[in-house]
Amino acid sequence: MNGEELLHVMAQEQERARRFRHHLHVCTGTACQALNSESIAQALEVAAKAQGKQGEVSVKCVGCPGLCSLGPLVEVHSFVNGDHERSLYQFVRPEDASEIISHLDGEPVERLVTPLDQPFFTRQLKIVLENCGEIDPERIEDYIARGGYQALMKVLTEMTPSEVIDEITRSGLRGRGGAGFPTGLKWATVAKADPRRYPTYVPPGIQSQKFVICNGDEGDPGAFMDRSVMEGDPHRVLEGMIIAGYAVGANQGYIYVRAEYPLAVKRLRTAIRQAQRAGLLGNNIAGTAFSFNIDIRLGAGAFVCGEETALIASIEGGRGLPRPRPPYPAEYGLWGCPTLINNVETLANIAPIINKGASWFASIGTAKSKGTKVFALTGQVKNTGLIEVPMGITLREIVFDIGGGIPNGHKFKAVQTGGPSGGCIPEQYLDTPVDYESLTALGSIMGSGGLIVMDDSTDMVEVARFFMDFCMEESCGKCIPCRAGTAQIHHILTKFQTGRATERDLKLLEELCDVVKHASLCGLGQSAPNPVLSTLRYFRHEYEAKLRRDGAGYGYANGAAKERVTHS
Image (cartoon, rainbow, N blue to C red):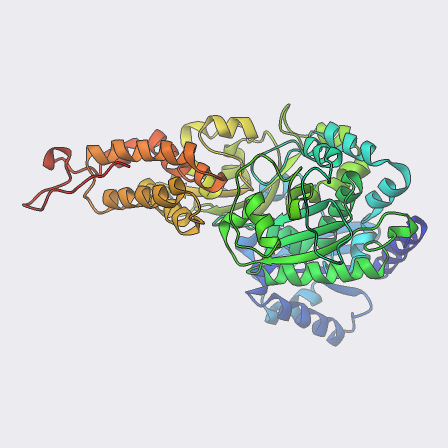
């Protein structure tokens, strides 16, 4: 399919859509599917036919529109006398289908409707998520109808690889996987890397000396950003990967996604097949000399495989263990070849940047953090779900405007950003802008986008212990600081929670966090102490309130044997 054919398909699909007066979008993301949303779609089609409206009603299964706390969701788009009217139904059940269909030409069903003018929707700016909730992720024609693969056509026919890299560099896009490394700089490094620098072994049948990897190994507790993008708009990810391959000189890509995301895997596989049949993926894409293939590799759920070198080891068929860097994957990556690794959200930003220009993207956000950021908003907040906001928005706006505040009469206490690698930010810093530098200054990180809100009933020591338990279990065990350090930190936190901790334990806790942070091999261990350090920084009084005051700091009382404290 070349550029002209792509435009022809777009026109056809747009004409097909105009034949229907009403478009019903049923969320079939993982959360709503768990609530039987596919049966709702079937019930709506049956009801439309029963009421003789099948010729004017289109029922479409779409990805997550965002407001997960009110699911299952059905959004109605009605076109009457040239006007576009929208309404959103919440908590929909299959038995509501007939009533919804019967009200299409009148007022919405009042008991089901939720307002679309609420801040949850109006305060967002969707770039990565612009198609989620709007297209059927299993139809490439839906993606093409909204301008899909136009950026790829532009790149292949109008731009050189260096011009593509320059456009991404000027946009100011930074990696959305957590570290915030400049995307254009990473692409330029891979493009310039010499594949012959290191001895390599590439398996037979793979005709590439450079590789592109999409890191979809999203493992943070409470995070579902990348999963939702892969489920709701898989072709956007593929298009970003193909453009990246063209820019850096790679002909093979891999999507590394955890096997716990079966719906994302299913839709990615469908998207790959469709793109191949359309000539948009594979050999001589769109009739040009450029070829690029994409395969999927499933992860077994090891959190450490989110780290680049551990991910590479897993794709190669080995145990997911990190290795020392340098050399970095940009020079020595998959099978020893230069390898570009970007996460799902980073790659989903590529097509809009190419289509609308670097200046457009750079005009959004702050001086050093451009564009938008997708967050999974969870915890003790009224509106939980998937959001996308411009960089520079404050935490207060996210929690109290978009999130709707704290439910059940409780008060805000802290917000956790960055998952197990991040930190807990207290109320006095709610007006902090959300950007890479500001969050780091507070002892947290942007991370991949998990954002957990906590109310005044939360025990911050238990929060730290929960995340340390996660890091301890997920440690690969390769380096002693992480393997032994996380276990010892968890042990001390358990002593706080069981009333056995002393002043000496508090001092030892801080010393251990410092050692693990600075001596661990990879990002898992280096960031594991962050939740402990941030809670010690802002909620130290909760630790001190749990200290035992007897035993002169030696951890014994009531005749118990003196506890040995060993320093390594």
